[in-house]
Length: 335
Ligand code: TYM
Image 1 (tube, helix red, strand yellow):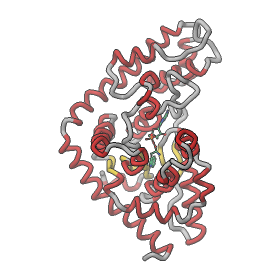
Image 2 (cartoon, rainbow, N blue to C red):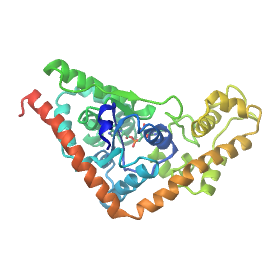
Image 3 (spheres, rainbow, N blue to C red):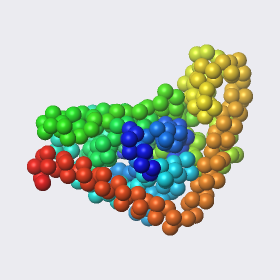
Image 4 (cartoon, rainbow, N blue to C red):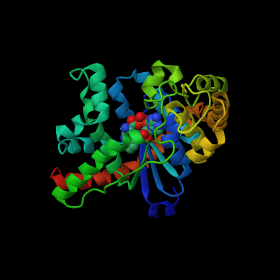
């Protein structure tokens, strides 16, 4: 990274290599990271330890990790301006996580939406403990790098609140040890909804079971067009104000990709049929994905290049993470 980067506010964010990425991951996270990379000092992590909470096949996890590294760069992150690294390559993440767990009341974790949803789906007794303490590991990811901001989609707000609570708790007990970060959530595209079920958030795991739920970043144009053509709309014959949830979601995707306000998008399509709106949304998505897909194919075929990039970044970020870990260890008395 250029020396001037060090004087900028620092951002840290991450994505789990658990499934392929969808349009929500792009609009809520990756696109914003790439767009703003000159404003910040950039740390972007591939959180493979978090992905272990889904008990993935080991070989598939290794592949998904490299695929995600390629996708970060394909979406525009410049390795010369961004640290792009794998969580498990930096042991300080797990070490700080343990210390944070000792500061976290169970009640804080029991309130987490993600833990509640997985408990409901699988039965609380069977959910692995990693799902429960997941927010502590995420807090470690953020706090280790003294991040000022955490650019994420709306669904991560609760986790970042918990991270802030933890930093404040340690600081109030042991003096100013940790920087307290803030969430950075954009106004458009921070909560893209499922195409088939616009009352639930577009989700990687749901899309793995129901392809019509999400446009994936690697979907070819005909698939994009088909999925959007089948997206749930309203019973009304044409776009109107106020739009129902399915139409509002399509308008938001369009507004985010074409960089117009949602009001301007609604005005543009007001009175037009859903097929006109869907055609325009599909065009916008295909235009955005084409360069990403071309770049991804090049990068993914150079596995050695990707591995080198990740190893070099891990070496650099190690130094930053270890310094914070040492500060915390001294503050709590284990050094
Ligand atoms: P993950 O892997 O589920 O999602 C990656 C990013 O995509 C955003 N996102 C969405 N944005 C808009 N609409 C949607 N439907 C949508 N779905 C997902 C997420 O908000 C996220 O920004 N816990 C995190 C990973 C993580 C992390 C971190 C993030 C681990 N450590 C430290 C920030 C900082 C997660 O599971 O993201």
